[in-house]
Length: 411
Image 1: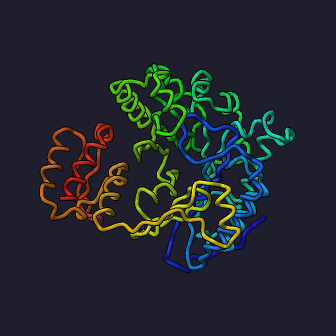
Image 2: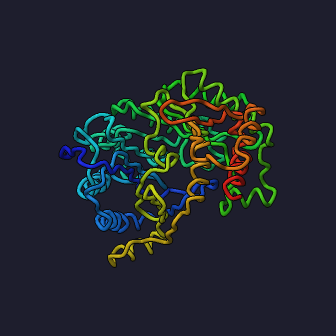
Image 3: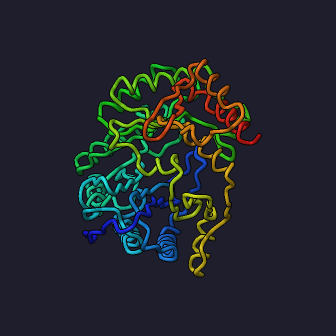
């Protein structure tokens, strides 16, 4: 289906995040909301379409759509098309072309893919090939893939209890290229217990063999309320020591930048500016985004944030009653907004604009300390004003640096 052209009639821009809260099996390290009860998928999708309708705003121009989860690739192509049709009906799309055209500078539609959900031996319809599925979603309008590879090492995948193998990941990548995708990113995890540089370098080299446009490299973290955190607290897992963690982080940055990737955010690397995640940059730049589905967050770009309930069943019930499935709202104070700007801004290659901190007592001392430790650099920018951007070594001490700024703001 081709969507009608939609013009830029409004200066109001936003991104849309759609949370698909289903997984074949929950990964033990993941703290994102998801369930494995796939019988709820059909009523969930009907409720999702209704939530999109309830929050319709045809003055709002949507220039990024991001399907996350959970496992979005558990959606059929027909279900995906219904969701995108609902978005196109209830919002303006910032596209000078139809959604089915190739990557447009105006509209980026990202779709997360779990290689395990595309394994023909593990899905109900064994006749549906990876290639056919990916070809179908590209035809519908998806123009960017984020593939949850995590590792090309089966031992690491077994430790992470992923439902896919290295072979599944490689076949998914090749099928995506064959289907015509030219904007593909991989998620990779490193810093597992006892992981050493050679093992991580093997993963990075394997990834680069497929010439991805984007890499998200995440250090394994032990999030509260997850099975892996409980195993760690009980002594079944010994996390990698801090020195080794720092060494792997430095290695990642140096190795990928040497291979022509831009390290544009703590965990994210792109082969060019055009291949950065335009949607995720909305979070880091604190601009407007709308979240749909259970647990999804929304922000009005000014001071209001709210998030949906973390329950598929309650979500379906509330939406079917014509109610927005909001769990809580909060109004940010000026200080809270500045603190959040600091937290997200310092994560990025551009850093923060110092004009927003003007007048804070002790600011110069903090900046001098950061520069003396080679944790950051002060840059003159004729257009945006002076900036403070952190170095990769500074990113290793991001929490400490952020705390220094928070202390200044809260004085």
